[in-house]
Image (cartoon, rainbow, N blue to C red; front, side, top):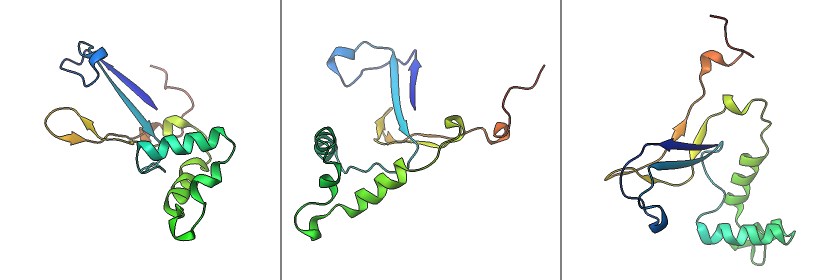
Length: 121
């Protein structure tokens, strides 16, 4: 899920967006991501594009296999989603929205879970 807030004042990290008045959040429907860091993610994406996804998790010495990351990937990608608006979402990286880093979570409105359309007014 992507969320863009408008009217957000303050300096931004990217030089090209220093004067921007927006803040973007990218969230996933899994508490943890299946890569430890950005370098691992680049390696995963490269192996996926080469059609060798499993070699990211299982190559060479079995003591270096990425079993935890493999299980996290299975959990994150094999759930059946009937309505994406009824899922919980988590940020995958911390945000600096002031002096303290924070993470973001989006919870569904449980009171509306079984409705297909809003109530008439």
